[in-house]
Structure formats: structure tokens, C-alpha cells
Image (tube, rainbow, N blue to C red; front, side, top):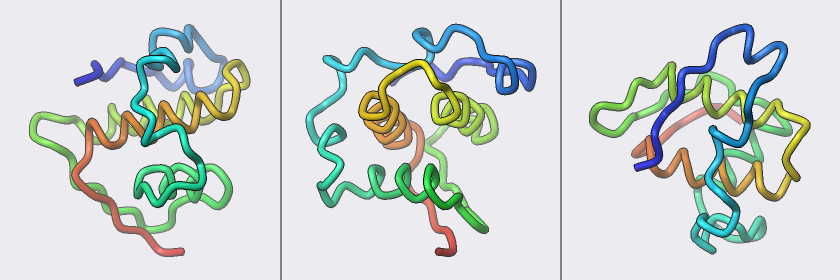
Length: 106
């Protein structure tokens, strides 16, 4: 499992080292790279990025700190540095690693 990093409020506002928060693109399984796939987590990331998630209810995997994991994802989504394809694939992969499911209003 990819390690969840501590991301402070300052990091979320001013940035930091994005490379330590994302797996290398070559290490992400192909199922998370195809933006047109039916992969649940790709859809969640796309909805989150473009519309926001309203009333999201996350079901974390055992021993995952939901707030810490979501701050990690928010940091990646808000970063200008990596290409969008890498951000989306990374976030979908990490959500799959850390959560069993999520529900939200569209």
C-alpha cells in the first residue's frame, strides 16, 4: 500500500514536494490510466476535480486515516506541477488503495 503522507494546511495553500505524494506514472496499473474506462475511482476523481463531491461518505480500508488520506488526495488534485493525466491516474490509484467505497450526491 502506498504510504499516506502528512499534508499540512500550509502545504495545501502554498505547495510542497508533490513527487513524494504520487506514485511514478510507470508504476500505476493501466486500469487507472484510461480516463474513458468504467473504473469507479477514475469517475470519482473526475467528479471531484470538475464538480466537487457533495455529502461524500468515505469507507476507508482498515487502518486508513480518512482525513489524512483525503488531504493527501486534495494536495495532488490542487497541484499545478504534474500533468493532469498523471494526477488523475495517481488519485484514482490511491483512492483504490485507501478506500473500499464512497457515496456522494451528484
